[in-house]
Length: 557
Image (cartoon, rainbow, N blue to C red; front, side, top):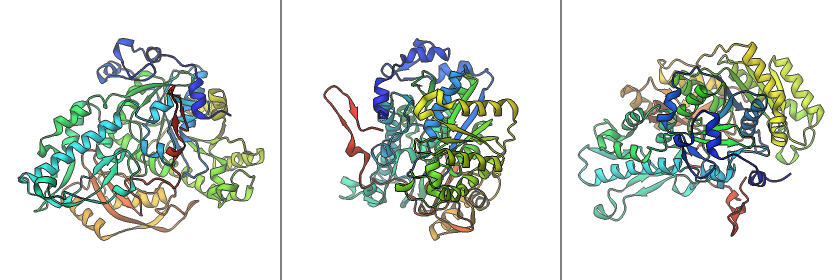
């Protein structure tokens, strides 16, 4: 089969104004970025405010493995499948980051015959949203450092600056640095700092949760940049640069419109990395997609323990979304890896390790049931899957009392997603979502963290390192204990140790630090050894990429 980029390069797609027309938006109302991408201004979207909401379908998955699960390809394929059935449907997913695109994970635009177009632009600079976030973040950092160097009227303690720098690249060498060298005039005040990947910036979270430019500015102003010598939190608005930051983000707040290979509209807006951020599409994109279409398919990052939990407890709590259906994606190869199979053997039939791997699927089924939303398990089909393996997964789902469908959307596009689309359609027609949150925001912060750790991850209890204990005390004394919780934990395991597969029980979750994202309205417990900026693998994907004289890109996947 042709590579993803070859399929996309040969695709016959519509100009973006024709896609906008399907949403009752005229060519004059969009802001094109070339022929196949556009921004849709908030002023245009607001005229749909009075429309009733369509049905909301959330795509999530089992714990990721190197064998691949296929969450994004299933999201796009389901939109195409529902579109083939004549439904007025669109998708809403988050934007790719350059870090994983050039690193290990690859792009985030689907694959095979279920892609969003144009994948090479979406996976790279796209419309510049992530660059704008980085600029706004680093502007705030520069103003902060300048304030300290020029007299420090706010009495900020340089050893307690929590605002790091931002870069959209996997630069492990920038995780921990010392800045301000060269003397007060040349370099400022020396102190420890570091970088986080841009999509983990609080500004990314704020943009994904905001509803208007006014709300954006208010949230930006609440960012806590550090503490004073007398232990008072310092907010960004005290530095006077919120207006300038908002100017840099004035276009970024508008969602990006693209299309699938089969011509269905898609909003791509919001940011990835549900292991260290909340990893979901923006509220603005999802809200107005629901106003414009009868069905909206959105995707939560990584496994149900991370992206889906954050969608339910953070995104839904912020804007009142109530999902009508969840699709839990798995692959037989990935289930076998959770059962102890090595990646090199995952293509071989192995019913024993497949059965052992069901523990991970079972835990995620149980996780979704805690939120009261009906679900269907989607088996993302690989050519190496055997009929006996497929039958075994179907039977196991039957025993669990959960629907199951095999998805062939990678190979066949929307046509290959008809069984899944039918199952989703039956849920929307016959079943009712009894959605509920996992925790109450008024619970003590420790209790909220414990609920997520024990209920979602299967931990026995939580321990806090010295720094985390100090942070917890400061947060509670500052009156911020009512914030939501956005856990930062490895995506490769239900635990905080990436090497542990399946569904371990009665282990201990270690919290080493707790950051405050006051503008986003949540705290971020840093668990285990998770890093806020990933590193590159020994063989980065970037080494296989090239572009020829005619502008034809190769090696992007």
